[in-house]
Amino acid sequence: MLISDALHRYAFTLLKDNDDAKDAVQAVFLKLWEKRTGIDDRQSVKNLFISAVYHYCLNIKRHLKVREQYTAKAPDALSTPDDTLIKKELSKQVWNSLESLPPRCKLIFIKSRFEQMKYAEYKRARYSL
Image (cartoon, rainbow, N blue to C red; front, side, top):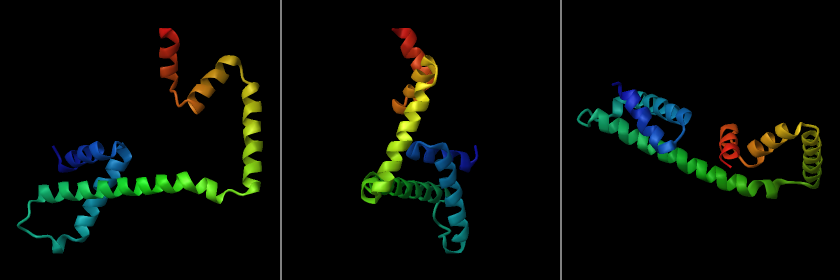
């Protein structure tokens, strides 16, 4: 098994996202390659990679947490009366468009967009009743 595969699995367990895990491993390889002259030869390469992936993933998680906190506060702080009016008008157009859908399509759309339910989950719930 390649070390990159093992590191990817480890990063995936920390980040729970396949693309982020791939990016993390790639970034760690690049960073260590750039700093290869300053790396201690006596240190275990395996431990070095694992430690680097761990810390890189922690930084990603910290960054995401800060981003979530900022985006939770930002819409209220940055909205203007024009934005509010545009949002209301857009919402009205969406609901008008929804009303023109056939009943089943409308229900599926509402379940998927507003209740974050996947179509397969909707089918299971519908048939289990």
